[in-house]
Length: 298
Image (tube, rainbow, N blue to C red; front, side, top):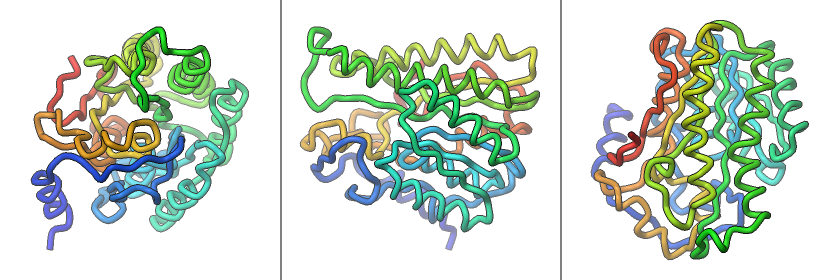
């Protein structure tokens, strides 16, 4: 039986939507119905990242979890940052990584704090023996109530902008002290940068900024041989969805894509593996790669 082909066929014929459900932020993988696919049983590595060392923010769940597992299957050691209350999910990721006989460094902390960001990078580089890949994945949004600009509070903006944008800049600044020629930075943008939802006005603004940051930084770091790209997901089944949206939105979640369904975290993993690969993506920089179920990102 070909596990990957069978899994792809199952995903291709799956309809949109999930059972109505809600969680309190930041959400936990084990409380989701159904549990997302992060590649635990479907991804087969081919050694494309052999010997590389990667720091993945928000690596305990969702897209970050899938990236950590697939990077390990491809031969990389990883460090993952996450909020302290996500410890159980992080330990689960570490167990999957260690099954591949790869190292997984756990780095709890709130990256809205600048010093936490800088310490996270330095500890990751020290314990991994260096740094070759940075994945800026951690993000926050809030869409559990109808909200326009007049409803966005300073507290909302601090949470969204510091998590999605400030932390990305602080972490990248610190990582540049450890990244050498051939290294790769991969940021996580969103379909929201191209097609913003009214209720996500602050979140969408950060994702548009990340696109620009990616292109600007690619130009700056090109002469140093460091590639900078972004992945722009569409609707993906992660704990962020039930933790930040109304439960009654889950049955229709993802149905507004041409493929008619939400994506699984494992379906983004290949984009990250490609962009991280010093061989396969050696001439790719300044790109925003959409994994959106058919919705445009340009």
